[in-house]
Amino acid sequence: MTAPHLPHDIPLPPVPRGVVPLDLDLGTAAGHRLVLLSLERWDGWADLRFARIDVGATQRLTRRVPPAEAWAARSDGQDLTVFDAVGRGDRSFSNGEVRLVPAPAEGAVLQVAVQVAPGTDPLTGMIEL
Image (cartoon, rainbow, N blue to C red; front, side, top):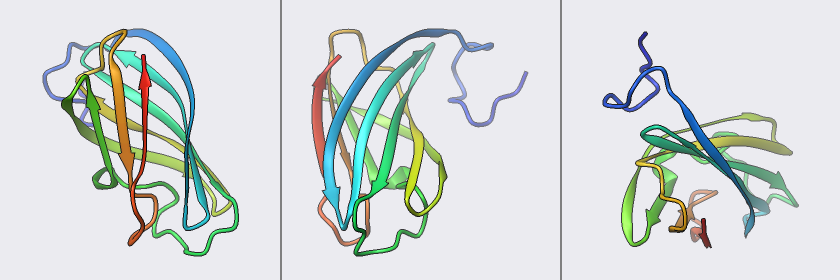
């Protein structure tokens, strides 16, 4: 089994370890609201699920979701690697996931920053898992 979209050193097949509901509204940038929905824990990584909602966009996005390089994440003060960011949707609404390595531990404090639109300040949030 090959899985180029996964970190190279994780066990295969992947095993889900749980889902943490988040419902964390990071706010709005250039008329694009971003909400963190959940964190899926897997062996070796986590998927941070999010939604982007157009609430009066003043700037069109080049992609429907912020790319991997627009994201930063820390768990208990340690940087996490943003492995990938993908999504689907249209200009009004899109959702997706950001793959983080390693998966934050249960009870950890997760800090997230994302630049939704070029030239805007990053939206940030913190939540205890």
